[in-house]
Each structure stands twice: as structure tokens, then as C-alpha cells.
Image (cartoon, rainbow, N blue to C red; front, side, top):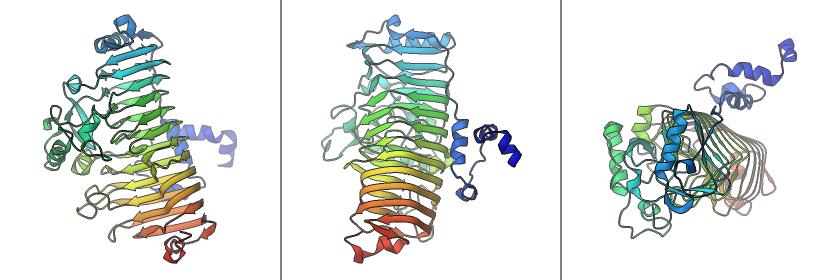
Length: 484
């Protein structure tokens, strides 16, 4: 072994190992028995492949697009994509200006490139997002309105540039379909509730996705970018704003890179990036300022998630900034297919409006769970709860499926202000297992932590309010209300 490592650099060895796929379902314990659990993250990085797009440009203005903020450029953009596809692929250029459009459907070997000072602005008229397409919404497959940018079954697909994607959602378009939200939209004439309940009931009843028709008069808001069953995806550099629903939503896709993207949308369910049932995903150098979770890793909801049965796995989140949002990096609640091998590093989280830092949410209807989550080198300013694992989300214990959460590592983390350090709540019959904290400090925590039904909780060089934390009782002590 000594000769082997001296003849080849460590990175070269990892490249050799990366030529073989990682074994599915590798457990945390297997990697924690090795000197550096983060070797696996480096292997994952080496397996992620970016698109190979031909170096030929097709400007949408050559196909009739006008960047005056008024002209409908839907047909011109579609024609440019078709021409690029017919030529074997290339960059479809959106130059300086404001271009109004309906849904954009991408093909293989296409890079939709939004140049600096260019805006692709989506017309918020629901009828434009017909005919229906096969899509996934809150973890359930069905026939619904087209996502604003959509691809199905494609390879080598990119969305790049320094420009802006504007989804056209606001307090009079798209968002009111949510129904009552933060004191708003209570008088909305049309809302998603009836269709949402019916869709979930269809899924539990086993009705095939192709027979679940919810495009017209269902009021289920489409995601902004959904690349479905695709491989070799790159989303880079763009700013995404005013999204009807989730902003970036790759589904059942492999080799996904989201790099240098700014997600800024404060509407209901404005999750920044939600990879669902995806494998080999890199999210790096991004900024999230969102009305819901900054990043939420998912794998399908309840019966439909178990029917599809594909986990989200091998996911790296690196060097990102999380501002407002329900959670910085979240797993769930739609995780019935399972989540494993997640690595979060070198991120900055801070905002009076950031509710939770790292969060796992599930229940006895979701089942599924999370294995092998590794978090290191976080700088957290202000947050309500730093670490949350909650089995009581929504249905709680009311279900026959046992969630599994185990093998969680938090390392080298500093938090300035939190209400609670930890909120960990498993079931008596389904314990949260093997959680370790190493080199973690919290300058100020104002309330006791909540920890129940957790086995294997380990503290190593942990402090809060200037006091050492050596066991869970240090966080639970109600007598130390001032300190915790």
C-alpha cells in the first residue's frame, strides 16, 4: 500500500476508484471507520460529469425575438432551440434586453445562455403552460402544467450566463393559488387545496400518474426549472427570481451541477434548489434568499415515493450562502425513497428570517429516511434552531412506516445566536441513531434543547454560552435557562 500511494497521488487513486460506481446504500459506519470520511465526497465530485455542448451559437434574435419587454418571444426561442438541436446542439443565446416568453422546453446538447443584462421573463398566464406534461409536484407524479423551463429524458442540458430568469410570480400572479399564507391571499378566489388533496388521494389509491390530470383549473403552481429524468445537467451563473413554486428542481436525474446561481424569490414554497431522487449532485458557490427552504433534498412522497423507489444520493453542498428561508439545508419532508450520502461544507448561514440551519423532517407516513449526513465548516450567524431532526412533521406517528435516520456528523461549526442548539425528536419505536458533534461552538443559545428518542449522541469539544457541553443533559438542563 505504501508503494501504491507513493507511486500515485491521492487524487489519482481517487480517480481510479471513481471509475466504478459507489455501492448503493453505503452506510455511515463504513466510511467513519476510515481516516477521512470526506474521501467519499471527493469520489462523488469525480463522478459528476458536466455537459458537453457543441461550440456553436444560435441567438434568439436571429429567429425573431425582440428584447423590448413586450413582444412575445415564445416561438422565436422554440425555433432557436429546434435549430440548435437539428445541428447537433449548441448555445441558444439570450442577448441583452428583456424577452417575454411562455414555457421553454430544452433538448439534449442545448445550453440556454442568458447573457449579462439579459432577462428572460415568463408570462404569468396559466393557459400558456398547456398542454400538460409529465411532472412531479411535492413528491407526487402526475400530468400538470409545464414547468417554466422543462426537459424530460434529455442529456447534456445547460442553463448558464450572468443574466436573469424572472418567473413573473407576485401577489397577483401564481402565488395566490397557495391560499392563505403569511396573512396574505386569504380571499383568493382559486387555490390549490382541493386539487392537492385529491392528487395525494389518487397517489395513495394507486391511480397511475398518467391518469392523474391536474393541469387545468387545479391551481397547482409549476416549478421554475424542472429537468426530469435527465443526465449531465449544468445550471450556472444565472439569477432566478419571482418563481411560482420551487426554483430549481431536478428529478430522477444524474450528474447535476448547480454552480454560482443566485436564488432570490420570497413567495410561498419558493425553495431554492430541490434535487429529488437524483444521484451525483453538486451545489456550490450559490446564494439563497428564499421564502421557503434554501436547499431541500427530496425523494418522493408516501405511496408514490415508495412506488418510484429511487433515493437521492451522493449530494454535495459546498461554499453556499443561505440568507432568509425556512431551512439552510433540509432533507424532506418528501423522502419516502430515502436519502443517503450527503455532504455539506464551507457554508455561511445567517438571517433573522432563517428558521433552521440543518433540518431533517419526516413522519410515519413518509417512512424512508436519511443515512450518512456529514456537515463541516459552517459559519452560522443568527438562526432559530441550529440542528433539527423531527419525526413529528405533519402526520407524525399516524402511519405504518418507520423512518430511519442514522449516521449524522457535525464538525467545525460556529454559531453566534440561536434559540435552540438542537431539536431532535424520534419515535420510541424508531430512534434517531449515531449523531456526533465535534468542534462545535454556540456563542449564545437562549432556550433548552429538545432531545428525545436519540441513541448514540456524542459530544467532542462542544460549547454553548461559554460552557462545555459533554452530554445531552448539558443542553436539556432547565435549571440553566439563562445559559440554554
